Length: 95
Image (cartoon, rainbow, N blue to C red; front, side):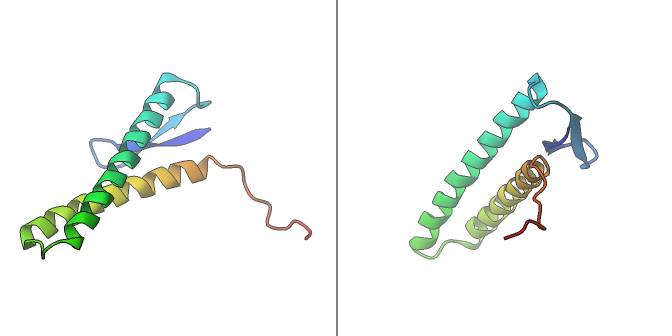
């Protein structure tokens, strides 16, 4: 199986791993995905707090927007990687 890893190379291109899913690099990728999703959840909580209070400064909104964009990029990469590892769905099944 070819796995899309949750990081890019120095050139910004995706990194892939040929794996059975049990090796040390696969486990490292799993841990990084777990951390990335956890940080995204904490960031979302923080954004909700900021937006529920007084009007934030423009600089704070720029920082939050940048951080949210990074978190979304990571989440989409994780979703793409995990989706590629799912078994194909047979859309021609009789109902």
